[in-house]
Amino acid sequence: MGFYLIAIASANVYYSNRFAENLEKWLRSPICLAASFLISFSSLMSTFIMFMITLDRYLFLVYPFAERRLSYKLNMIIIFIMWLIAAIFVGLPIIYSIDQPSTYRLYSSNSACLPGNDKNIYLLIWLLSYGGVTFLIWIIIAIMYVLIIWTLTTARQQAERKTSTEDRIVRAKMIAIVITDLICWLPLYIIVIRMLIGHPLDVHTLPFVAVLSLPLNSSINPILYTIFTTEFLGIIRRIRKHLYLCCNCTLSIQYGHYQSSQGESIAKYHFKEIGKFKAN
Image (tube, rainbow, N blue to C red):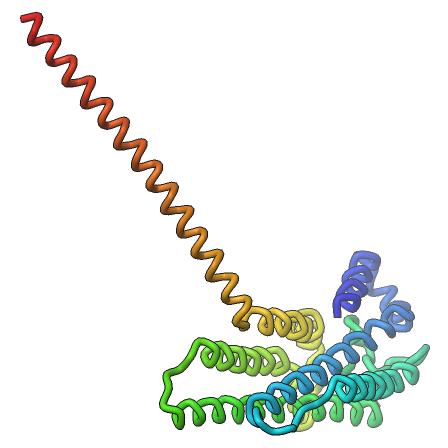
């Protein structure tokens, strides 16, 4: 995703003030083809990886005492197959788009090289399949997270114990992941649904989806998985505790200096008054 943003930003700088006359040259360039492949491939693989992570959490938390686990070897095989499927699924229409006019290009005349050709029936089917697969995966992920929360809540109630810190962390992580994923992918799904009901492709919203929405989703997921962990929150608590102690120590030292300076001022005042009294 980062390479895609670098490619689009570099093209924006390179063709600045002369983009209109070089539009077709840019759209036929290998960089635009590569950028279209990267945005499609990385977004699809991000969805696949999220599915695998959620499946692993689901098996671990819903069936804690069962032998329903994905081994390291099996995980590697599944992820390799997913990479292969994603590369072929995205690569075929990209190869089909090489040195083609806008009607036969996956991204048509979109300057951000984002797939969105609704004029070619085959590329439209590909686009609908892409949106349908990712949407179906997010539905499955949301269902698994709901089942995880329901299982943990039921187990806690049966054990008659209070909500622990780990339970709150797991719940917060799941809710945050589902909500952020839905928000980031929602613009793309709205565009696809509008196309299905007969509206023209919204070429003004596509750059927003390409530059902000999908990259934000890829960037925020690792942060959410890092923040909502017991280890990370423990580090934050220790840092906060040290800062609190340091602030208290600083305030105590300043108050001590203030007390001593006040004591010196009072002592000097008394000595001065005593001197006046003796002089009289």
